[in-house]
Amino acid sequence: MKRLREMLGGRSSRPKDSISTFVLLEKNMASNWRAYEAFLVLIIALELFMVGYGIYSFDLTNPRRIAYFSGYIILIVLSVVALIINRYCNVKQRNLRLAVWATTVYSILLVCWGAIISGLDVVGGGYIVTFMTLLAAVGAVITFRPYFFLLVELFATGVMLLTIACFDVFPGQMPFWLNLGIFLLVAFVVEARSYHSSCKQYRMTKQLQELANKDGLTKVLNRRSLDRYIDQLIKEGKRFTFSLMDIDNFKAINDTFGHGEGDASLVLLAGSLAHAFGDGVFRYGGDEFAVVSFKETEEVALQIAEINESLKSLDGRFPLALSAGICAVEGETDEKKIFEKADQALYKAKQDGKAKSVIS
Image 1 (cartoon, rainbow, N blue to C red):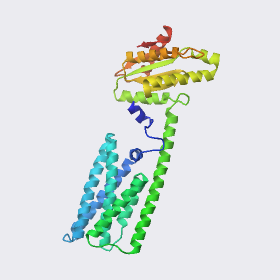
Image 2 (spheres, rainbow, N blue to C red; image 1 turned 60 degrees about the vertical axis):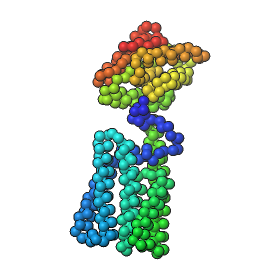
Image 3 (cartoon, helix red, strand yellow; image 1 turned 45 degrees about the vertical axis):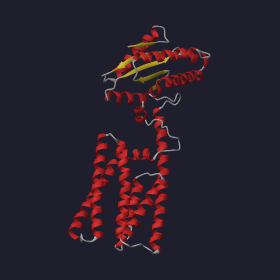
Image 4 (cartoon, helix red, strand yellow; image 1 turned 60 degrees about the horizontal axis):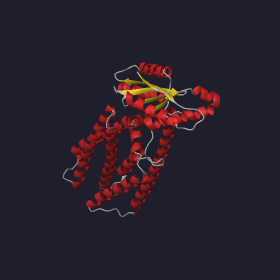
């Protein structure tokens, strides 16, 4: 049922307050991959222009100019590779984790590239504008954990200073260090606020997804989720077992003991079904539940029989039992027919004495 949890934004095994950078990046990439692609195309175009400009005007016997020119070529190659991976993974909707990893690695390399170029600029009497611009841009696009972003900042700064030192130049002026320190601090604070804001938004979105996909009383998935899941399975041509069931004599429970007892019965049955079938349990409506399983029909019927046996041992004011209609689904493209087939089997189970399963 892993695919169902992913499709419906299901539970995570991570602690509530621990949201991985990878999850945030995955969500961000899913909605912004076209903008990221445009960004890569722009960088490739700019670097191609710089390569042409370098061929035309650079003195390629000058080590610093050779370093510039090599940097342009390297960035073009990296950007083309990142563009190909991004387009393949997102258009095909496969290997999305590869796209996220590629984006992360490319972003770090881009910052380091900017640090090298700024180092070369400083050697020539210029400023660290390229490094500052790219670090700010990456911080705005990629939601890194703050302390990881700090490590990227410090590592890239070290790369820039090393580049400067390679040409036997080292900035000793106080304004250089002051401006660099202020910028790194501001960039870190902005990234930290962005990260915590993204985490908060992610949690709110997840809560809204749960409210939309789950039944408020029983906490199992609702009819809306069931329709979406079965539609997805049909599109993928999956073979599965569908079961429709309800609580025997449920109206009598409500009439005799009140709706509070009826609600308690629904919660109890939902818990029993969830224990047996995991995330494949749905509240169909009223006292009816549906189960989607990839087990054989006979095995599903056996599990329902075991649930009914366990219910007999409960010391409740009213005996609880389930009747179920079960059918195997393979090659069926009409969702309505699947429900009708299971409903007819459920009706036969009721007619045959209840507290049993009928396989259609």
